[in-house]
Length: 225
Image (cartoon, rainbow, N blue to C red; front, side, top):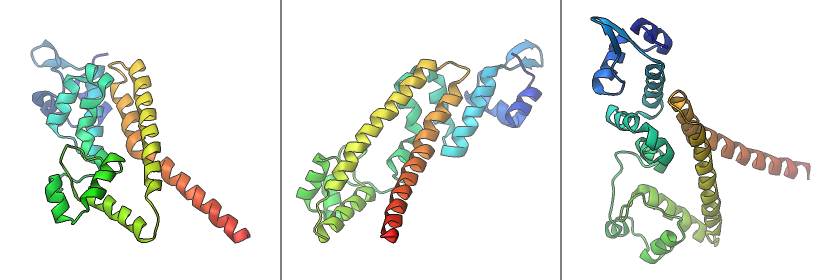
């Protein structure tokens, strides 16, 4: 279908000036020019605008990140990497302004036992985002391990977390594969809403509610006894 720009504004709730700006920035394709001052837009414009708005509102994606994604969307959906790249800080839970340290600096600044650090790296309790790149996030996990040691408990429970996290990551990969099988230009933004909502909303909701259910069940059992 073809639309006037007024219809595009009505269907997306995005101002005309913003739409024209997105076209200028290369986020949207040029309109089909019928004659001088008469332009028509397509369903692709609507899908892209919805996708852009979603990514900006929920993840603060920049124009450059979105431009790269949208220009490579056909190949990137199957590989996932370029689509997820704007969200890596969110996935890693590391603030964009976090201070980074080499391993040597990290050991010195946080007074870390290097043998323990190597063991945690081997067990994948710690997984730095980049080689020889540590932050306060890694330091907080080491502190947690130290708390376990203080009460005389090994951190095997964290190793079990790693086991199940790996299994979950494989499941998430299966979800992406299934979405790839049904992907087309029309459902592009909807499929990525599914990916993002699964990773950043449903995962936390399901895990936290299951934790709540388990604790509530235990508490209820204790009260009855």
